Length: 504
Image (cartoon, rainbow, N blue to C red; front, side):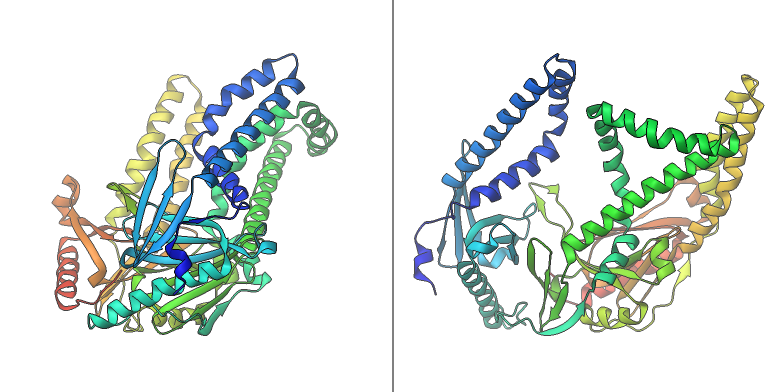
């Protein structure tokens, strides 16, 4: 045991860089809307360059000053089986983290810490919102010592209580289970559903770009976009071609960002397994060394978008306990294995759920889901829109609204076909999707709460919606018979009574 850790320790002065990064993240996430009035002032000013420089200098001084103060007031020490942390500039925080409450201890090595032998020790506890403690800028040897002591304590407590240790305190990585080449990461980038969320980010950024760089934007439009539009022509075919070209450009840009993000986060990916835990190494500039207790896995999720289905790749997610704070739901932690082939899926299932059956019988939800969804979400609104245009004698627009409603019917039918559910031998499975899919496997004994709901129409047809709450999230199975819902509920209750194994 390193006795020096019993005394109050400071972070390295280089941790100021770490705190600058944290401050920037909080600023972009929480305070970005507050910067909008400042941008209005900049654009309305006659001295844009002067005002912009003043704004940049002011924000830089504020961020750097905040980071220096955070470093100065941050102290930590070990006291027996606890870690004590004092931090906070104006609002002082005194935190006590018991080893028994710690779920994950991960080590990150950012590129700016690597030359100095420093790391970030991330400590995550049960019931905390996100990471309970980030010790950013401590020696790698100190981080390794703390992690080993935490795991050894948990292993000793589990052994003394007659249980199976949930952690392995040794520093060996164990058997290599999975790795990801650059080709795999490209496949993950294009098959991950997260690629489409980039559209939400890119849309406002494009607006800011064109408003901030008006001269460049005008040149781009005049020399590139207008000639392309002229080449395509002003007719309907030209307008359609221009629209398709713009959509293609945005989609390619989204995929490019997604691929670069996948390479940045998962470069050099290696997943190893020991008897009771998993360890993952990945990262291009920042090296992530993360561990996961196998008993903590709540769900086994395999998912892919339509491109992933074409290239026959699935992304695997080990769902963990969702952290929370003060009664508020926290983020759900995900342990991802990128771009796996179908042949690899059974072994990965057995890795986290050793007794899972090879096959679980599945069935479709009731066909009435098709009619309900189509009528409520498409026919009704399109009828109102068509009626409005008819009163305006815009028969073409009314016809388009009717066509949209008709076109959506095959999509609703396809979505209905993707819904599958089943349960057998203390495990449940649920699948949903449209062009892609998301398939969730979970042990019934880890279910926290179940609820059967019926709308008036469902009650008449003896149908129900089954909601299954797990520590990793919620599963909603719509439009199944009341008999199936009750049977599912009985099997869950039976599994909970007969299986007392720990699960977090």
